[in-house]
Length: 274
Image (cartoon, rainbow, N blue to C red; front, side):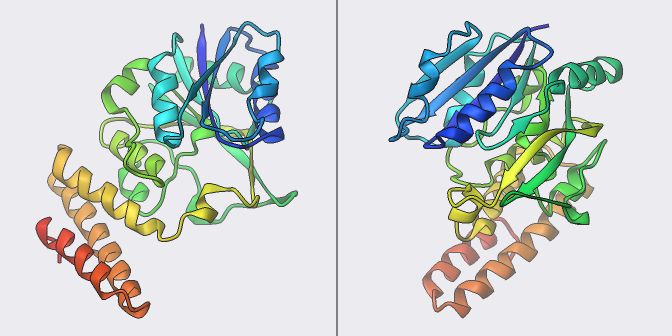
């Protein structure tokens, strides 16, 4: 079974090479690795062009963001399965082999595995709220993203139904996609850590973007307008959206940004929330 592995890359240097090496050294060797250079200004990808592995494909685009990079790669993927990997993370050598076996046995169209967290060189234990879930995960996913891109494996038919990533969200694009997916699919969970997730480095996206809750608000507004929701799902989403709107507006007023508070308040009013 051919697996298409997608890595978006922007100025990640040695971390990208480490991630790519963890893919090409998998015990399941039938794969293609698609790296999208998202307008890097350093030599992050340049060094990989000398690698002599025919399974490696490198695409380049002008700087458009991680969503556009992933969408581009998946559009060109030829695999029977698709897997994502962030350029600062690493797979265990048997990640694909074990994950594919789990998915074949269970029949899930989308699943993820557990992961090890390393921050600033030290292994840490994620909090209880970050615990991965199996099954229909829409309700807990409203609070925060419970699917790690580096841990996920899905079918092309899954992608056709829920993709692509929203390119108008500079952050929380994964929160948005997995939340939309959780309306349609039950998620599998392989209960072993097959990914090493690294954090704490200065260019980590979640540390660079201020006001992440605004992008979650945009995601929830989009889902409320465009997705088929049951009565319960609509109620839960509106309740979560109302809490986020009130918190964001309060924060704007506290920081003397009344115009932004009013702009977002109007977005909520248009959606019938505030």
